[in-house]
Image (cartoon, rainbow, N blue to C red; front, side, top):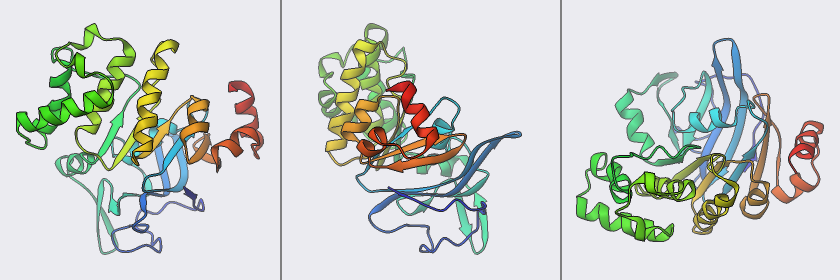
Length: 277
């Protein structure tokens, strides 16, 4: 991951990249001077960074620092107020024509979102559907895959997350950790090029955290590009290629996770880690 200069946001600014915003064939995500406000509250202030293909980036920081909002901006669940975001060279949520930027229609934004998997704090499984039905819902309804094809792929993914034997079970019969693993399988069923995790273990009992983190570790080893908002410092130290510390809507410090966690350079980073480590 590389960190860019924080300058004034400008949605139509030239960034020195090619016309579609790509940062290069090895770059999956480029955030260029992202600004996001909710009323008078500026949540993100000129966030600039890039994530390479196959890289795992963990984002840490106190509550209210803008971590989850930034993640939601990447797949246009939140509209940015300034700057530009690209995923795999494609401008997210907007289309550029000449010097002007136009927001995509909801259907067009949803089409982009198919390639970006997201796992939330809460599992959000459909309670009236079985595990298998939850996993095949999006491929059959959004991608129009046949039920047979989607089911075969779903069983592969459930095997991958260690839950093939739960295919016919309903979410209410599963533990929180099992439900979160189903949620990961559900996101993977769309064959995303990028996976976003928004504190995926924060709603789990402590003894269930490990089973979810193990699935995420294996996913990282497979080469999936991942951005993970987390409080699990051990996971960040072991799995992440880069660690980003956010506070007050800005990137305060970034670098090798082991170096940042053991030898933070910024006083705000030091104060935060002193409380959580």
